[in-house]
Image 1 (cartoon, one colour):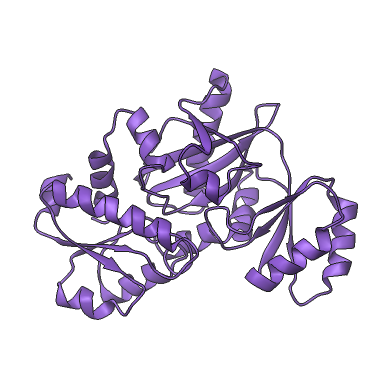
Image 2 (image 1 turned 120 degrees about the vertical axis):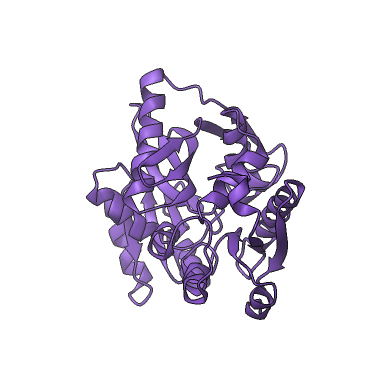
Length: 313
């Protein structure tokens, strides 16, 4: 398969949406759309914030390129809709998308496959937060991490160094996101690995080490130029580097990802990579990690876009 297989299809690049990652999605979508058009393919850019189903039908879309990050775009919702409409689409299918978006569900799958992931406790929003925090203090040492279960781009993530603000932080997070969990803080090297391919034909791209200037790789560090130092390939020992790439492939396969995804990890002082996140629709902006990894592997942005489109065929 290649670009010739795509020339007879009208491609819809779906972006925007209504999640907290809307602005990044618009940037990803526009850049992907420009690449598709520059390569001589027939495409339309669609913001899914409004009623877009009539637009899909009007244009007789033959392939959807999903560039929606976060809720309704990365969680299986848009994938399920496209399945019902009979429109082939890029990336992971419904179940893998839902698992990737739900950090607790994906961690449970990785645990079952003996893939290292930081320890965690899910917060019950209907039970006393104070009692749960008392239990947490007896289980987890500080620092620890408070995270929403189903948000991307590190939205809502807080690192707590002591128990002073634990109850308030958890209560605020539950009020805003409802589904929240506490995660063990692992000190180490922050890395991310893009995986591309389908079936057993998978390839781990070069490992990217992230050195944010803020406390961790948060939303601003991800999308503000100059806020993060990117080191590619990561300066890890050779055996650890290979282990990180293999762990990325294992994590990708475990939740059933398809086409492309990015796996985020922390490598501790013993060289163990702990998987903490799977991004089934990683960013494709000028500052995004996946295009940088592809470029380091000798793949241009345009070539990466074609590989992504091919995953729908």
